[in-house]
Each structure stands twice: as C-alpha cells, then as structure tokens.
Image (tube, rainbow, N blue to C red; front, side, top):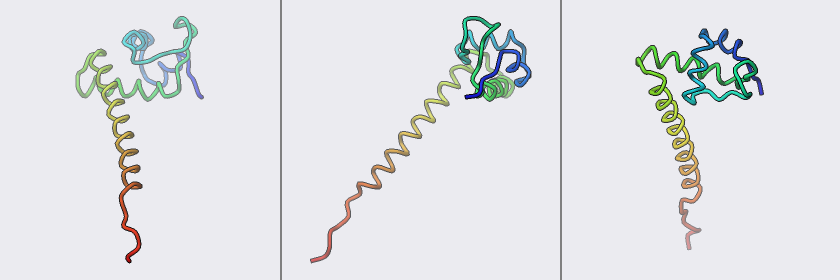
Amino acid sequence: MTSVTLKELCRLGGCSADWVIELVDEGILEPEGPDPSVWRFAGASIAVVHRVRRLQKDLSLNLAGVAIVLVLVEENAALKRRLSQFDEEAALSIWQPGPQR
C-alpha cells in the first residue's frame, strides 16, 4: 500500500499543512503516527483531499458539512453494493419449472 507524508500530501493536494490538520481533526483523514511530523497517509488520501476541496468550492461547505457528505456517500455506495449482491442472489434463486410431463 502506498503512503505519503504530510508534506507530500500537501504538495500533491495543493493545500497547506494547517488545512490537512483540520481534515484530521474533523475525522476526514486518518493518518498513521503520533504527530504531524511523522504522519503517513494512505495514497487514497490524495483523492480525498481533492474531493474535499471540490465540495468546499462547489457547494460552499464547511469541513463539518464535508465530513457528513463523505459519510453519506460511503454509506450510499455500501448500500448499492449490498443491493447488487441481493439482486444477484435473487436472480440465482428464481424458481424455474421442472421438465414437462
């Protein structure tokens, strides 16, 4: 799994360290490590940073609002996955008539 430092995340995400720390405080990002000087972020955090910036710009959301939107998006995706699995299971269990007598 690829990981990035705080400095790398800021460079790749086009943002400041203070702003990333706010994302961590809101629970939007979850770094590994005890403090910012040694934090490591999953590579997927880069996409999260871009998504947060886009939500703030497009919808004028504060970070608390962004956190709620991200949770709802993830819950929606999980529900869609479950529904898809249910649909597949239902399709397999459709009653089919036996041979004609």
